[in-house]
Length: 70
Image 1 (tube, rainbow, N blue to C red):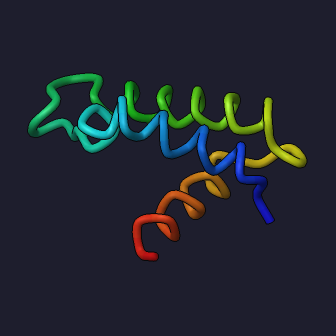
Image 2: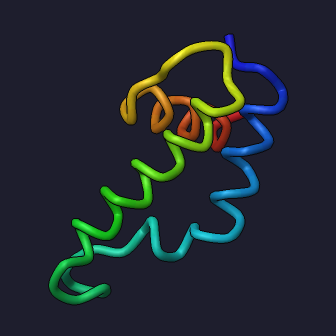
């Protein structure tokens, strides 16, 4: 279970970076996948700074996907 603060961190980060997070090689150019991985890493660090425990990048991605679905 994520804290409300951790959820706010994810929401705010994605609000600012959503277009960069959706880039691929075809629309973002060379190195786009690397940039996206770095952004996910930054988001995970920010989330872990306020969250209830260390989470992996995959856990943060899953949380974001669930937030979008619901």
